Every structure is written in C-alpha cells, then in structure tokens.
Amino acid sequence: MLDDLTSLTKQRVGLEDYPLAADIGGGQVPLYDCAALRRLTTEEAGRKLVMAEWVGVLKDGPGIIVLKKAFDDLEVLDHATVQFEKLIASEKRNGMETGDHFAKSGANDRVWNALEKLCLLDPDGFARYYANDMIALVSEAWLGPAYQITSQVNVVNPGGAAQCVHRDYHLGFQSPAQVSRYPVHVHGFSPFLTLQGAVAHCDMPFESGPTLYMPFTQKYGPGYLATQTREIRDWFDANHLQLPLQKGDAVFFSPALFHAAGNNRSSSIRRMANLLQVSSPFGRAMESIDRARMACALYPVLQRRLHDGALSEAAVHRIIAASAEGYAFPTNLDRDPPIGGLAPQSQQDLCRQALGENWDERRFAAALGARVESARS
Image 1 (tube, rainbow, N blue to C red):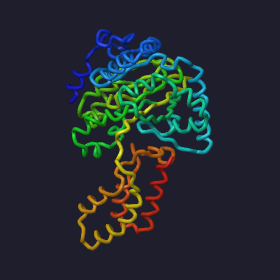
Image 2: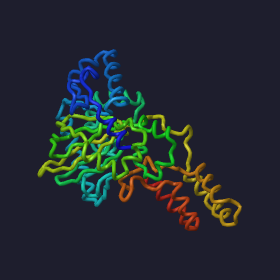
Image 3: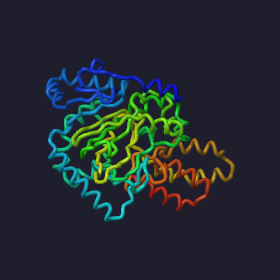
C-alpha cells in the first residue's frame, strides 16, 4: 500500500501539462490567475477550455487547483466575513456546541449550514458573494449545471491542532466498518458526486496552518480505508504539500484527495475559510417518500414477528432496508453535530437498536420523531 502511494505521489507537473495555469505550486499544483481566466471565459469556447483543463487536473492529474484572486472584490469578501463572525458570536452566546468531523470539538469555530444562514441574515450580501464566477465555473466543470452548494465556515484559532488526514463526503464520512461494506465500484464513483472547495477569508501564511494536501492520491483506489490507518497517517504527516493562500484565493479539489487542515502555529491569525461542498443533483430517489412514517407503521409488526419467530433477524434487516432511511445525510449539523463520530445515526440504525433493546412502540416513535426533527433546517 505505502509503496503504491509513494510511487503515485512522486509525480511532477509543469506548465506544459496545464497551459492555462499561471504557475505550478510545489511542482505539483496548478495555480490559476483568475484575472486572466475572466478575460478568456468571456467567450464560450474559452469557458470550455478552462473547464476541460480543470476536469483533467481534478480527475487524472494532481487532484487540486488553486484559484488566485477568485474574489477580486475584497469588500464583498470582508462583508461576508463580518456576517460570519456575527453568526459565530450568536451561536456561542446561545451555547451551541459545533463539533468537527476530523478535529477535537471546541478547537475551531464552526458555522454549519453557513449557506442558508448567510442568505437569511443578509440576502444582499449573499447575492454579491455567490455571484462569483469562479465558484460557478469550477462547480459546473465537475458536476454539470444543476450542482448544489452547501457551505460550512471553519475558523482555526491560534494554537488549533491539525486534523488527521482524511477524504471527504460521501465515503470519507463513514467508519472503516461502513466503508468496507460498499463495493469497489462505489469507492470509484463516490468522488464524482461532490467537489470540495475553500475560500480564504484572510491571508493564510504557513504559520497559520493552511490545508495540507497529498496530490494524486484521489487516484488511489483503497484510499477511503487507507486514510484511517496509522501507517498512512504517519506517512502523510511526513510528506504532505502545503500551500499558503492570500485573502480572496480559493482552492478546489477532488473529495478523494488526501488532505487535512494544518496546525495554526501563529499567535494572532484566526484562519477563516468558507468550506464549500458542492454536490451532484443526481443522488436522489425518483419519488418523495415519508420513510419515518413507514418505519413507525412497520415497527410493531417487526417487533411482534421477530419475537414470535415468524421472521428471522436477517429478514427483519431486509425489511428495514426496504423501508427506513439508511443514510444519515443530509442533516442539520447544528442540532446533530459530529461529536464522537463522523455521522449521526440513521433511521435504519435506530430501528435496529430499538428492536435489539425491545423498546416499546411509543419510545421508538418519539426517538424517530426526534431524529427527523434534528435533520430539518
């Protein structure tokens, strides 16, 4: 495993590989001058050239692009920063515990669902922020025109420790036991369902701990399990690439790229990034179904038939899989933050727990109702 990764990540690229880039960071990451791209993309042919090159980088190349001055109007960015700080202060006053998927709870300041919160707090500021052409262009390049944006603001305070290396949503937010249940081809297509991005809301010199990356690792098939091993975490810590950013820069990368937020060694820099997780529109069922209502109707039947031996435990699990929601996302991470795990409990998990512990029908309905409520915006 380690030999394969070492060989994969030794690759280097140059401007001859990505002719629209302005520079190559660390010998591996294309850096793009957004002022030049804006001139090029005034015509459709230019847009297609840029998008095609970016797809090549994200899919078959280093897996990461840096967009210099993605926000060329810093007043728009600073205005959003003020609104994000208001949200952080308000949530602290209200005693909200935000948690973090890959770092110690309380080490950072988080705003979950910053997209909706910014929109409701300041619709005009939201409109100016998300009118950004570079966010739209890279999102469309990777996911097509019907992409969906979510946003989480992350502030790593001075002294904030680095995250452990990981991949991102979807399979990156599963435990090793859960990941191992998905077939190999799902490991392959999961990275094509989302795009990860971050907009720098302040200058991020090395001492502030900008994100650590391992270029080309998005192409490593067993990576969702590999990142959860001590051997690979130690290797990443010793060999990662780190790139400083300036306020207004943005970075986008494959969710399968090995990465981790860095250690903020500064004494005064509150490193704020707006983390963008852009999703494909295609990961949806054809019909709208109230699966919680189905689970409530089925629960006493399953409990009775399991107890009298009419259904085996395996059969009950198959019925649960056909009825209850098996995936914990999307959810409201304010009500159900990732404290003590990567993802909250799914409806199916709750059904199995309730049956295993022989809850009565009323207790199960109340717990399921609370689960549904916790997922609402």
